[in-house]
Image (cartoon, rainbow, N blue to C red; front, side):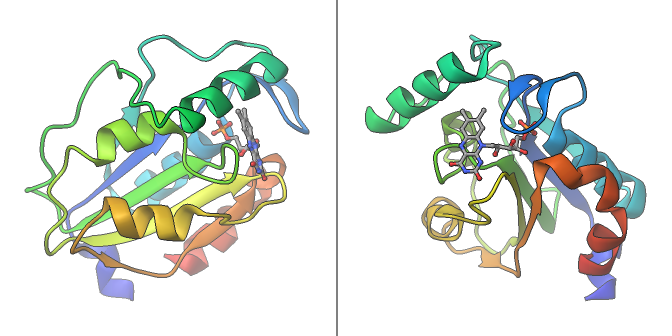
Length: 169
Ligand SMILES: Cc1cc2nc3c(=O)[nH]c(=O)nc-3n(C[C@H](O)[C@H](O)[C@H](O)COP(=O)(O)O)c2cc1C
């Protein structure tokens, strides 16, 4: 496992500030805290997926928007698109659990990439659902990639999670 840390890597992640479950309004986003640990520990590049029209700031409306997007199987527009992962061997795919899966803007991005021969290291932050449906969602999205062991951390405990992340790496 340890030599995975030395391979050319990128973290592709989605993360949102504003009001969230269990933590109220936050300025530093849960998944982003972990993405930055990874960058510090592996020198991976970071690519943040951002929805062109941000989700609502309040949690209740945001939940409705996220659910609607899933129900309609939408591909929301994103601010920047990562066109290729050809330069990378290891791809960290990170996101919060939204309604038991990855947020749809991640689907918009992940579907655009060629995953053949890549090593995928998935991670979620959540507030009780753990990995939920993300393993099967990623097996569909990252076709022909080798998808390795998962890590799931409660969003409200990301600041206590650095050791866990380091051991997982
Ligand atoms: C729209 C929305 C849907 C969510 N759905 C779930 C869920 O189904 N299960 C769960 O455990 N947590 C859920 N959560 C909580 C987030 O997964 C958790 O707070 C996460 O750490 C947020 O990460 P972020 O701050 O990087 O965006 C949801 C949060 C939001 C905003």
